[in-house]
Length: 265
Ligand SMILES: O=C(O)CCC(=O)C(=O)O
Image (cartoon, rainbow, N blue to C red; front, top):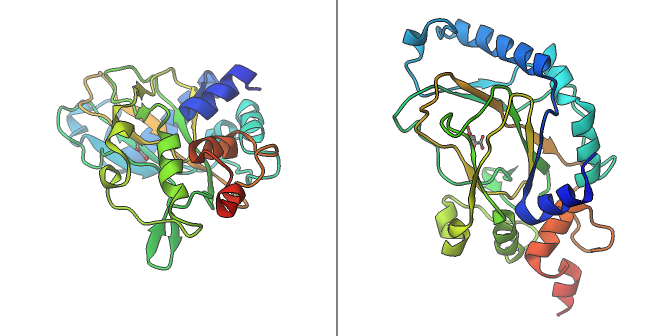
């Protein structure tokens, strides 16, 4: 269970790390499966000469140890606390993709600031303040991730900036191509926190938290994490501050006032 202080940290900062959420032997078994998949792509665990690209994406494998990782009791308890019991669809696995980052000096591409909250509408990808489908972004660390291992960078508190901008865009939301054109410059002056930790740690992030990949990778071994969304069954109404649980509370805090009050103003 998250403590009250951790929950307040999630609301204020937009993320909380659950250390040791996944048992070490389970993370290690997930890494073995990832290497088996990489081997199919010609990238060998014991053969650094084949680590020729800075980044290889694979869909997060299903089954086996990924079921144990994705259903870890501490994680599900935290989802209930942050999102609300019955408000997120339980998944027998981890989901999302695995960006495997290899030791390299070069720009891997796609390392710009963004948040993962788009919902497809026709041919558009819209982000709405109601976060219609996404409840959380989770970062599962399957290997130890130190400062040199190209950790994901989190912009502490940036979910509030995103909520404030989306709040002005109506229920439908808006389409954006660059975050720099969407957010005020001050948003990018917030503290940058590297998502470092040990294999088995899981960062739970607000769906509006701005983050990006980092490079170069000057560690010795590939960094393996998964970055699934925890999905949301019903969009956040953003009307009742008293009833809101932490993910919704954080959006309301970023908005300054509930949407019904704003309409009445
Ligand atoms: O690979 C990383 O560190 C971050 C990946 C990312 O930004 C994402 O999946 O949204």
